[in-house]
Length: 340
Image (cartoon, one colour):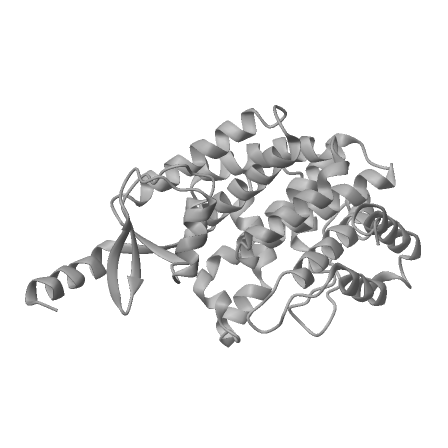
C-alpha cells in the first residue's frame, strides 16, 4: 500500500458509517456510493445510481458484505429515500397483490423502526411509523388469510431481533384478537399499536450490545426497565389511552428477562382499567411477545419453532387462562398449522 492509499483509508475511516445491507432492500438503485470492507480495507462496491436487485444483494452478502458503509454526509439521503418508500407503500397498500404489498410494508416498517430507535425523539420518524402501523393494522385485520405468508416472508428478511419482534408479536396479536370475536376494530387497532410500540424503550441500549452474549449489570437493568422507558418516550406523542400505556408498563407479565414472573401493579388504576390490565389484554400482549421472542434467534440461544413456543405458552397460562390458551392454540392451528 502506498502512502497515499494509507492516507485515503485513514480518511475513509473517519467519514464512513456502518449500516446493514438490509437498508438497500426495496430499492432499484443506490442513492449514494456504497463501500464494503475486505481484508481490513474500505472499497467502493457500488457507485451512486448503481442498479440493485435481489441477486445483486445476494452476491454482496456472499462476499461478506452484510455490513456496508456510506459517507456520513450521504446517510440522510438513504434514510429519506426509504422513508418516502414507506409513505408511498402505505398510501397504496390496498392496491395490487396483497402479499407483495404486505411484504414490502412490513420490511420498510422494520427499517424505519431502526431509524426510530437511533433517534427516538424524532417526531417525524415516530409519526411516520405510527401512521404506517395504523394502516398496516387495517390491512391485516381485513386479510387474515395472508398472515401466514407474510410471517414466512418476514422471517426470510432476517431483520435484527430487536426490530423484528414487535412486528411478529403484533401480527400474532391481531389474528388472535380477531378470532376471539370479542373486540371491535378500534379496540384491536389500539392493542395492535400498543403491542408494536411497547419495546421502544429498548432504544436506550446501543444495538451492538444486543449482539453480545451477556450484558453488563447496568445494561441488564436498563433492559428490564424498558417498559417504563417506553412510556416516557411515547407519552403525549402518540394516541394511546392511559390504560394502554399501562399495558405497555406491564407487558412483561410473563417476562423472559428475569427468572421471576412479573405481577402487574394495578393499584393506581381505576376499576375499568384494572379489569383490562389484570385480564386478557395484558396477558395476550405479553404472550404474543413471548412467542415472537422465542421464534427469533438471540446471540445466547437459537430460535425455537412456533410449535415449541406454544409449549412454553401452555406452561405459562393454561392453568390460569384455560379458555384463552385454547383460543391461542386454535388460532395458530387454523392459520399456521392448517396443512400439518
